[in-house]
Length: 148
Image 1 (cartoon, rainbow, N blue to C red):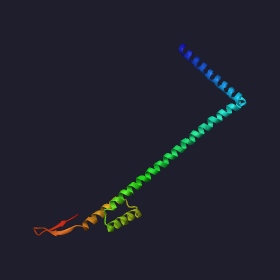
Image 2 (image 1 turned 120 degrees about the horizontal axis):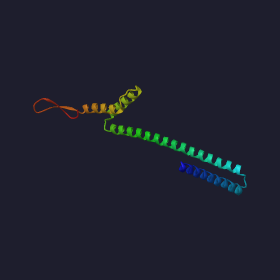
Image 3 (image 1 turned 180 degrees about the horizontal axis):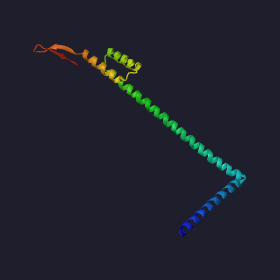
Image 4 (image 1 turned 120 degrees about the vertical axis):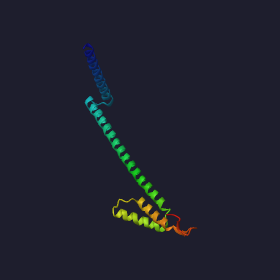
């Protein structure tokens, strides 16, 4: 119990010392600026409020910058996905490219859940079937040669 009283007394003395230093600082600023202590205290409080407002504004700008960066990343990811689909398209014949683009547009217009990749795969399948050739093998049976 005695230790608790000693700690409380020490804390009270520390608070008084801090308050005395604050008062001395305000008085010194008042002498320096030729202001009365109350006006100086108001100036210190105003400076604190301005600092808090500036920190909040900086925080809001940082969040807005992160939002912009995130939106930019989303756009880049979409562009990368589109570029991958275009790369797949280059392997198709002109007619199949047109079929793919028509089907992709139709899927989009109909709000179909089929993806553009499905359209590419369908076009590839049709394109490959057209390249198949039926030939007669040595046994006289018909045999499909080429892509199926």
